[in-house]
Amino acid sequence: MTSSIPEEVHYEGGPARGDLIFNILLGFTLIGIPFTIGAVVRAFWLRFRITNRRVSVSGGWKGNDKTQVVYSQIKEVRTVPRGLGAWGDMVLVLKDGARLEMRSLPNFREIEAFILERIAARAAAPSEKPVEGFAA
Image (cartoon, rainbow, N blue to C red; front, top):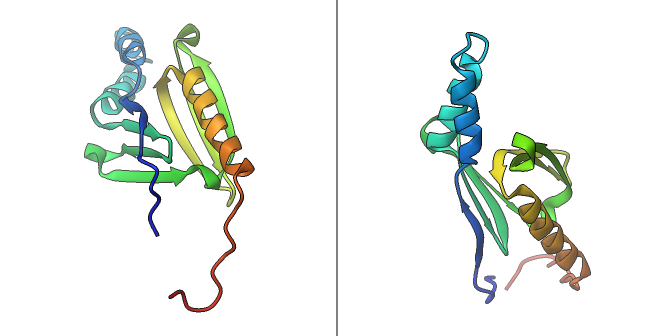
């Protein structure tokens, strides 16, 4: 069964550029080199796509790991500001206890409000009765 609601993209892109710049500057110290490498890998291969129907994150080595979460699976949203509040990290806690981390998310407060709005809309919508037996 497919929904007739078109999927509208709220945010699509990579991590915040400020995170990369800050970590490159930090990389001039010996202690900051691992953080710089992490920021460069995130800049190359981490991508977020947040729509009115789901949250998708692709990352990992060369962007091969893909994760999608629909709003009905999300129980809680936690955020931590970074870079003086210009970007932040977000964790989506799912109903089954799993967590989806999104690091260096630009406009994270706006995105958090959008996700919380979608979760509230899903909770307020009448749920369909689950199909029992064989579906025709």
